[in-house]
Every structure is written in structure tokens, then in C-alpha cells.
Length: 418
Image (cartoon, rainbow, N blue to C red; front, side, top):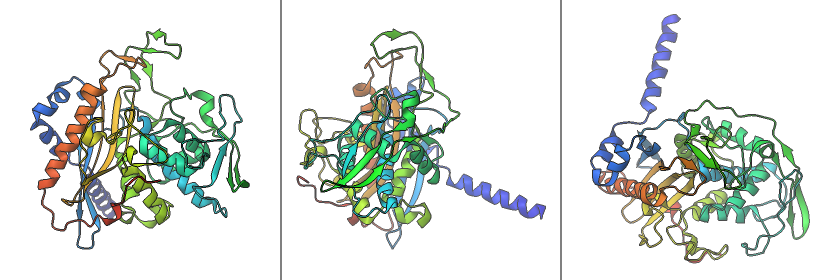
């Protein structure tokens, strides 16, 4: 019996090792392009870069099989995830609608947010929507098209902090927590309280979600939580102390790609590990996740503030003058804050039958001061992400495949969607 358990443990260990991403391939690839990456490779902290690149090979039945490669991947090394937390929250909002089983309650239902705790705000209108009224549908559109912060906050309030974190555990996203709203200074007790929300169809109430309180803490043992030498406070005064990320959201690179993989390829997961989404929910997310904001009619996003490559860091680098390749679509969610740029992407070339996943983070804050809006996004972070995505794309163009993918389910018509 002892020998049996020893062999079983050895087999489990071997399986675990087999699933770990290769750590040399990406390093070699980056080093082979010093003209693009020497600044990052030679920087004392490597600009906190972490990368997870996943090749996708289809079998004869078009079932995807994955092989991953990593660079400096470390779930215990903290980076601020910024807006990337919006994608799982949007998924959980759609799941919650489906799980409630309330007759007539859909993502199109009018969603009126009330307030019940200090600092909370009410929302009764949404001028960006076709009806002028808020809804789960329009909030998710705004998140996927331009990473709208208020839209995320409303979904955070609808799902509730406790349920969000329960869902993260359900899907084995053990290096992630979502514990606060974005861009409003949400901290302390206010993060635990989420607003009451009411839904209506044709002016008639159909569902009331009460105000909720989450008494749970979500402690995580991480390195790099204390950063820099100073920060600007809410009154724009310089505080000569390091900036503390200890109570902020956490969302590791591996968990980010797992969320995206489960969303795009549910067939690769056991039924009990798939999101509780309808086929229409999946198509809705795919559609708006891969759209350029200027392609949408309502909400409307125009130049110069918004441009086609807006929020497509891993191929276009946030370049407002970029020429868009008509054969390529990027299904992704980005984040940028506190000097961190992150992109979690599935990149598809329909003409050349290319598909791959890459999730990456890079940071630059050379003066060591936080909240001073002096970060090297344009000169360090975005060029790095653009070069990384394009380097991997060029590699994928040449990589042989036994079976070319059928990418039909990811192809949509985008001409001025309403």
C-alpha cells in the first residue's frame, strides 16, 4: 500500500510538471531581438515583465489543444491588475442573470442603481445607450469597447463582492481577488457594501437586488506590495512614503489567461467548469470584445479621444495612427494604471488561419512616485507590448500546423453595430 501511494504521488508530480509552461523558449525569443527588447532585458527589474504565451493546435475535429510558454511568470509577485478585473466581473454578471431564473430578466432589462451607504451613488439614466437607460448589456458593451470604469463599478455592485470572490474560487482562480471599485478611491469599509439595484421591463419592476455587505477578508501572501518612494494623495500632496497595494485587487497573469481560455474555448473544459452562459451570451461577449470602438454606433466613440486601435495593446500598442489589418481581430481585455500596462488577448488572423493567446504585464515608473501621472507608458510599456504581440504573430505565421483551424465562430460583421 505504501508503494502504491508513493507511485501515485510520483505520477501526480510528473503530471504537474508536464503542465508547467516552458520557461526558456520566450527568453530565447526575446534575446534574439535585442533591437526590440534590450531595454527590458537589461533593466534592473526587467520592468516587472511577466508573459504567458499559448499555442493552439486543432485536431481533425477542430478541438483545440494548448501548449504554453512563460517568461518570469510568478503568481506571488504582485502587479496592479487595473481594468483587467472587468472581464471576469462582466462574465459573472451574465451568469447571475441566468442563475436567478427570473421571468423576463435579461441583460437588456433596465437597471436602476440606488444607494444605501456613505459614498454610494445612484444611477437612473445612461445617455450612452440607445434607450437612454442603463442595462447590464450596455455596461458590458462599454467595458469591452473602451474599458469604462463606471460600467465596471455598476456590475461590481450588482454581483456583489462576496459572490464575485466565490465565483473566482469556483473556477479555481486561486491567485485572484476582486475587492473594490475602480477610479473612485474605493477603500476600506465602502468596498464591502454594494448598492441595492432594481430591474424593470416596460416600467414594471421585475427584480430587486438588496444592498449587500461582505464581511469576508481575502488575505494573500504576496511580494512587491509596497512600492516606490512616495505618492500623491487625494489632495495632490506629496507623501514621502512607499505606496501600499496590500488592500487592492489581485489578478495573476495565469488566472487572466485561464478566464479568457474558458470563455473562448468552453469545449476544452468539463461541463461543471464552464461558465453558466447561453450561446447568445458567448456571442455577445466575443462580438464586443473584438470590436474597435469606432465601429459601434451606440455607445458612440469618436476620434480623437477614441480610435480604432484603442485598447489593443498587444498588436497596435495604443497607436492612434495605426493602420488596422482587416484580417486580424483581437479578443482581449487591457488594463493600465500605476505605471502598469496589461493585455490579456486571443489574436486571430482569419486569412492565414493563425490563432494564439498571450497575456503580459509590463511596468515603468522611473521616478518611483505613484499617482503623479508620470509613467513611461508611451515610451516603454506600449512599445514593448506591441513588439511582443507582433513578434509572436510572425512566429505563428511560420509555425507548421497539422490541421488548420475553423475560426467561424469568432467571425462577426462589425459595420456600425447598433
